[in-house]
Image (cartoon, rainbow over all chains, first blue to last red; front, top):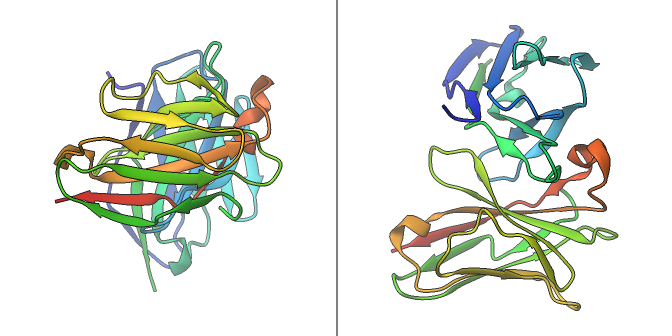
Length: 113
Length: 118
């Protein structure tokens, strides 16, 4: 079983739709959780960072972490064509190497005008 | 992504040649990380360096790969005798510190170097 599982998609939605992305993980030692957005041939850009279970909202984006179920989600409201990108979940803080990030494979999202 | 500078952005090498990828961290950052993104795969940690020190190279292939972060100049990821399987995007990231749980939101990635081995 991989440490982090993420459905690669692709996911295609109409403009304005609510998008739900998620990851599961197996390592209960992970302490912090992130979502990155990566445009084609670009570097990952941090969207959301969460250090504990619960919800965090930033504009149209909401991140949820359920540590008891080892499940994290990213919701995008009122999706826009500019949201079309690959979304990567990442987690870290395991043991003494809290600098080391473990990524999912990424979900390719297309928002159609 | 602004601030972490990687070059070259694109590099083509023939099998058996050497590839050198460079990374200048964001201003004020003294911790550098290299990640590799193989086709259809997520980013994988390779190595963590501070100035003149390799802190964790647990993700580095045992042969042909090396990394350094000298006192002066950029961090270098060096791949000797490249093979087709080395074709990937190599990302550098930097952070100002690694203490506690806050490190996750202080790591910034560069735009990547795309290596193609022909």
